[in-house]
Structure formats: C-alpha cells, structure tokens
Image (cartoon, rainbow, N blue to C red; front, side, top):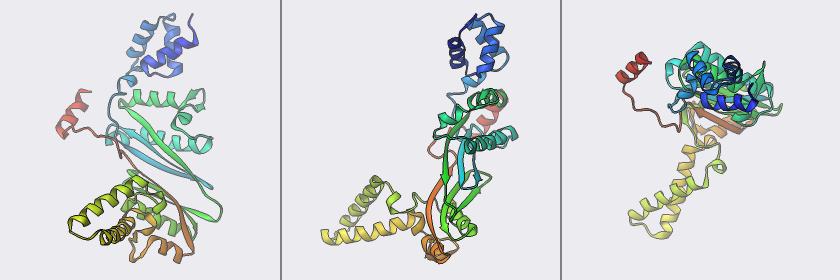
Length: 290
C-alpha cells in the first residue's frame, strides 16, 4: 500500500513523528496529500510550520553521573514555555539519555530510539502539543578522573550553566570556580584557550591606541604587552581576580586549596541567537491570536 520512503517523505513534509506518519498513510490508503491533511486536522503537522520561528529562550541543564557530566541547551520561543513542566521534563529526559548513551553530536541524540520512538519524534510531538518551536541546540559531555571534582552551577533557574573540572581541592572549591565563571563570563580557561584571532585583534587595537598617543615604536610594543596582560586577566578564568577575594587570582585560590583548574564549559541560553524585536504588546497579541 505504501513504502518506507513514503513515510520518510511525509515526515519531511509535515515534521510529524514516524509512527504518526505511518498511521496517517494507513488511514488514507497511502495517499500522500490526504495523509498530510489528516495530520493537519489532528494538529500533528503544525510542528513543521514553526521551523522558521526564532527560539532564543529556554533552559540549560546539568547532570552528573559518576565521572561523567553533561551540560545542554534547549531553546523555546518564550520564557513562559521554558517554565512549562512538560518542557522542563523533556530537558531532564534529554540529559538522562545523553548520559546513558554513547553520543557525540546533536544528530546522534535525536536518533536515539527509546520505546519505539526516536528522540526527534518525541521532540516533534512536544512542539505540536505546546505550540511553540522547540530546538535542541547543543550539549557537551565532560569527564574527569577519580582525583578530580566537578564544580557545577546554574543561575536564574537555568539561564546560565557552568561545569568546571578541578584536580584535587574539593567540591566546594570547584563550585566556587563554577560560580566565578558564571558571574564573570571568561572567554576561556587560560591564555592557550583564547583564539589567536581574538588576541591579534586586541593587540592591533591596543597598538593603534598607543601609537595615537605619540609613543615611539619600541615603547609602544612594550605597552602592548603590558595591556595584553591586563586583557588576559579579564578574559581568562584562571587569571581573573577571585570574586570572593580580589587579592588573589582564581588559579591562586584553587592552588591554595591543593588543586588546579583543568577545564570549563559555560552555556548561556540564547547566546549568539538573534532575538526578535517584538515589543511586549505585540508579543501578548501574538499569543492571544495563536
């Protein structure tokens, strides 16, 4: 009556789940157009219409299982939906699935089969039910050795999340470092982690500023070095002044407690996504009008 390729085509056209597409084709004797109408009538196909919308709100979640931790970001169109229990449950579920499976990409996660449905099927069904675009944007798995500690911190209910790995010290020290990274938004862990093009651009700006002051070339070069060191103290986590005691750096604080910061992952929900410029009244009317 119909082939597997028909199910695939219907999924691509409607964004509906595999099982829903199969049922739609069964109910309509394999007729593609009637199957599309059937899905639309059931409200299942509406998820596909939301793909062009901007989803810049949402949540990040952090979960730890032994020596493995995961941090992920799932986006929604509005903060209201980000607080919806079904949305938050799905974010928790995603974190559990990532920890339980050997996955390295978002596509790997979406392809996980759980109970006869893929994660992508469950996501599409959630979009249809909630009525907003929902996007699983990114995740990162972090591992550590037995002699290290995870420091985790979420701010504003999951608008910013941080995982750090600290060798030695203890979990309290590691959490202090995670809170530092959350509050001070470092670009990277240390000098080696700052992209070369970022450093080059900063050095060029500094040199132009110094030369504009009329300094000789050799003096200008020394001043560039000095101001770059100041720049590093702002953008490198381990060189930042420790927020609980500005008389020492983060690296000094951790070292004084018998440890060393090994890694950092920081996620801020919606960073890098161009947000809508709707005003509040328009947003409310958009919600009322569906």
